[in-house]
Image (cartoon, rainbow, N blue to C red; front, top):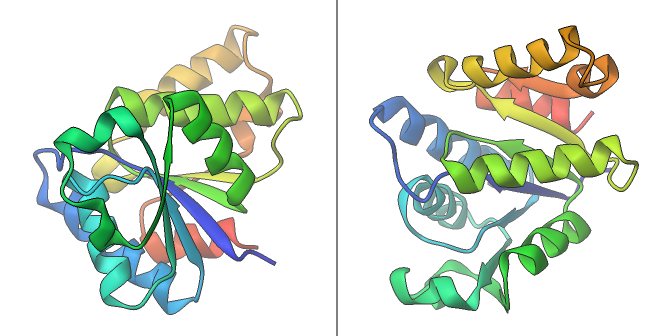
Length: 179
């Protein structure tokens, strides 16, 4: 049974209002399903949209934030339970330890780093959780093309690529992640 989900997303909002709308929707939907939200601990950008939507609906949350990032964030005490950690590596390890599945929304380098680390752990048998991409307005199409090329060239095993759930509707992604 899925009781928690970790969301990776941008600390910026991006240039497309649909990113914020879908992030708000998935935050509210996670709360409606009674699933605990694990996230990067910040309150800026899509991460801020996510936590605000989830908390507004009464969602239990756990933010995992490296100490060095607290200086450029809104007051984190307003965002529910938090764990402050020493570095990014500890953050990702705790996210893996506390999450039953993972969803990735648009974001930048940090979001890609988190996605690829979890995917690598899954490939190496260190993680078994489902991983999904919320492909809002085809944001992840270039990434999927890159992964498909890795499969075609023999660098990525087809089963790893096939294990990534891709959806464009937040509710559909959650349905597939929690099955």
